Structure formats: structure tokens, C-alpha cells
Image 1 (tube, rainbow, N blue to C red):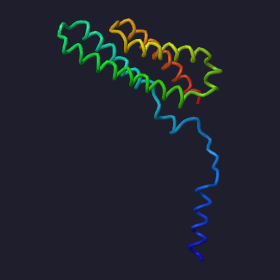
Image 2: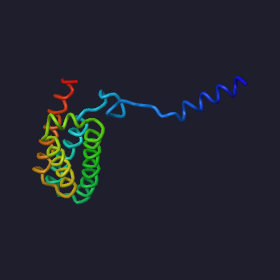
Image 3: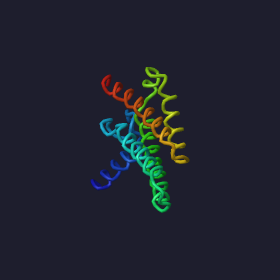
Image 4: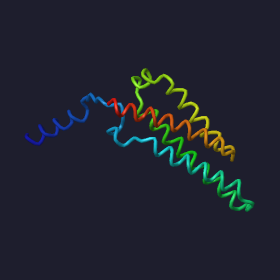
Length: 140
């Protein structure tokens, strides 16, 4: 009888709705725009090396790696946008939506070009996201 009671209690805990109050998957200490910045710096460096090389094999490899790094930038931006920033942040920083849009567009452009100016624009957008991010962390 005792076993059955414990089993039913366990079942109640498994199926009972639970209220969770969090705006992110993990404590906020795990988020940092630096991850996107490091990958974006790699994208820029690869573009510079691509443009300086005449070796077609090297340039082909550089394009593949640059696209992978750009995908990582995109991934880290998504994590910040969807898991860290909240509607309260958007209220305080209404430009945040536009800054993220520009960063995401620049990430997409970086996959299609080897124009270093595109990577510099991406880094500028990430710098703005970084500034806002750290202001929100101070306020928390």
C-alpha cells in the first residue's frame, strides 16, 4: 500500500501543472554578446584573408568556414533575442528591434559576400547590442 501511495504521489508531481517564473532557459549569467562578437570577428578576418589570397583552394575553404562562422553569429544573436531580452527591455530600449534586425541582415549578407565593410557593419551592430545588454545587466 505504501508503494502505491508513493507511486501516485510521484505521478501527481509529474502531471501536475507547475508555474515557472523565468524569462530565459538558464540563469542570465550564461548570456553574453561576446560570443556573437568573436564569431563576427572571425568572419571579418576570413574575408580579409580571402581577399588577400590568390589560392583558389584556400579561398574555397575560406568561404565554407566564413559561412559556418556567420551561422554561429546568427545562432548567438537568436539566443540573445529569444531567450535573454524581454518586452521590458524593448520598452526601455525601443531601438533594440532595429539593431537586431540590422545585425541579422548583416549576418545574412556576410554569407553572400567577402566585403569587409559588411563584417564591420555587423560588428558595429553587435557592439550596440553589447552596450544595451550590459545596461540591462546593471539594472537587474
